Length: 190
Image (cartoon, rainbow, N blue to C red; front, side, top):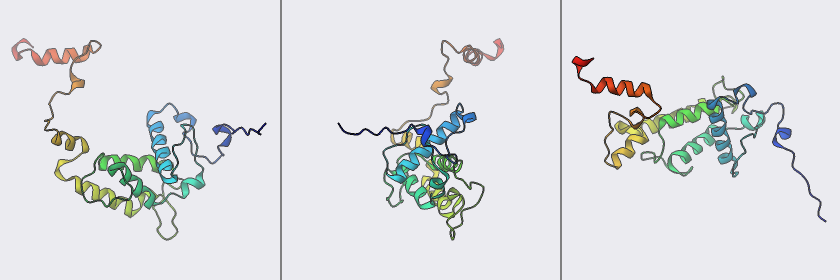
């Protein structure tokens, strides 16, 4: 009969210096989203399939993140390939997406308040000049057409409506019904 080795649970594997979502922020949706982005980034960087929701990265792992890895990840998210030469508009996402990813990754970096030092390779890699130049380059490539959503609408020949689907009244939205009722009535009746 083969020997079976049971893996310890992830909570037992986590070290004291691990960067998991703090207990007080577990209910915070933004903190959960930031941790999801970090796990996705680390999985891409380590070429792993994925990391489970409760996975905690050590400070050592996080200190090894470089601006080049961040830029490759950004290219992958925008163009579907981390090694692509950036010359056209992003296929998905925009510079706003990249700013959000930078903020999410930066929130877990051990030295997040320090600028990136290219000589010692220490500090916050999301603050590196190369990362910021890349985001500026994407912003310039987007041009006047703006975000991914606006570009998709242009491709589909759609025009943005002044009243979105979320502003139409629903059965459970009495405040929205009241707003619509006031807008639809003539000015003298109000």
